[in-house]
Length: 465
Image (cartoon, rainbow, N blue to C red; front, side, top):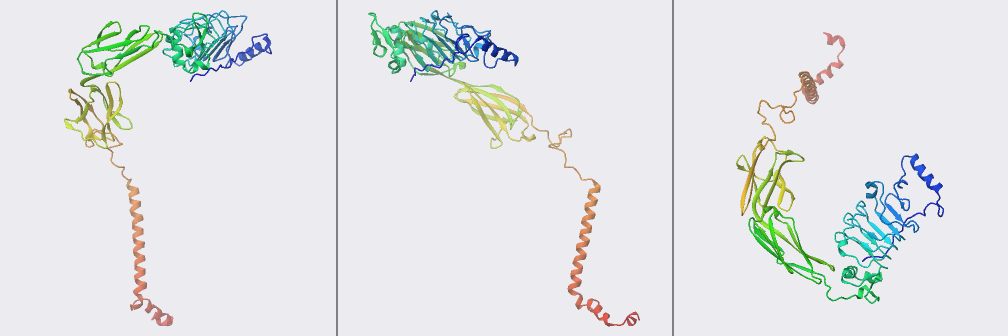
């Protein structure tokens, strides 16, 4: 639902009016020059003296110094930064022509109100694809073509206060705005001068055109010929237009409300291409489209050397319709795909499949000639590429320390020190075991501790004898 809101103009009163004075303006300008930049405001030279400008907005509302066209700034870059233009109270502003807004490529909001605007070119917004808000309130427009907005995505269109003429040429406004036409109280002027609500406008011989193609999809084999028919209807009589981008040659014959297109020797390059037939008159436009489904054998358009990434990858691109079945051979033997080797499809375009044979940590056993075989019911294609991941470990020329060097040998002195420590520990442990045995069994031996205790009660002289 469109909304008739009016954006704040943001315009400051011109120098010499209100609280702004030339002294303030010069002070701001000099301050900007002192710091090397005027900040978000443009320099005085960049903005026309009858308007006020910021980095993204132009406002021209002075009634005494009326402009006749949209202002041009000093550079294209400054104009590309503009997103809002507000024009009001301009008695000499009467038309918007083809190239008036060509530099304002990022324009989103445009207001031209309370002026003498009587004409808007059909091509005026061809460079303003971002335009969303258009306010043409209180001007002198008697008609407005729908073709102006054909390529735009306008969210708000305000036309209140224009002397629109009740004719087929404005019927599209009623159809497009719907209930919003009543919200804006849009009226049109009849031949007798009466003003009628646009929502109540009914006209004979004023119909939205229609276009109908003979089919919505064509499925044929490459090299075949095809004939397509488009029928149109509508009042006034519509213009019939074919729109397509094909490699295949075509011939078109149109008679009245019917047109026939003949395609000869269809190319596989046109697979999934869109063909559109449209009907246009002053009330509006309708179109009908179809897709070309061309059947053709596989063609391997790319098979590249293996590249290391997170995994090793052998990149490939294959075309074919229906989708080809892919099979890999390594040195003429089938590749058994599984957890560590698998075919991955990363992208699908209109007619091609792009992917790679993914290998996780391949070794010298995976070296060799890889052959990709692509096959469908219309034929097959194959290509071969050599892949080398790792040298054989028994090769005398191998110098890769990461994969092939033996573990480092410990220095001899370190090894002897280890043996000494182990030997001392073994002797100590053996002595400990012997002491346990003596303590346990020494009391029952005549040479043990018991005999030693008896000797303790004998005088020293007797012992010495």
